[in-house]
Amino acid sequence: MFFEDVLKNFDEKEFLKIKKIEEKINHDVKAVEYYLKEKLEKTNASDLIAFIHFGLTSEDINNLSYSLMLKNFQEKKLIEKLTKLIKKIKEMADEFKDIIFIGRTHGQKAVPTTLGKEFLNYYYRLEKQLRKIEVFQFEGKLNGGQL
Image (cartoon, rainbow, N blue to C red; front, top):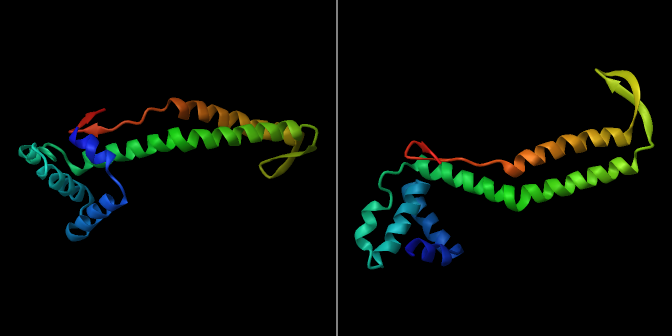
């Protein structure tokens, strides 16, 4: 409940409190630790303050944070934007399927191709990557163990 309350009430003002602590100690993770300790002091669970950072390294916090940020980006932006791009490339492949031009390979003229076919190559490659991105599982470690 404590952490849910802190998160629910977290805003720019609270963020600036952490940044102010960080300016003094020059350590971002430690600044969050001190911030949480200050919050915990004001509760009936202040006897737990010593356990806020118990058994954790800054890397435990950072690698989990990076994974969560990347997962959030993956779910809320990357998949959506990539899906729109793939759809647009597919539309362009259909639109330009009859435009013929000389293909090139290694800087030399090659077999004729169509602009639509070339767009389809990109469509296929991006579609394949999107399927991998959609199922990708971000990992992290905590106290040396994989999560």
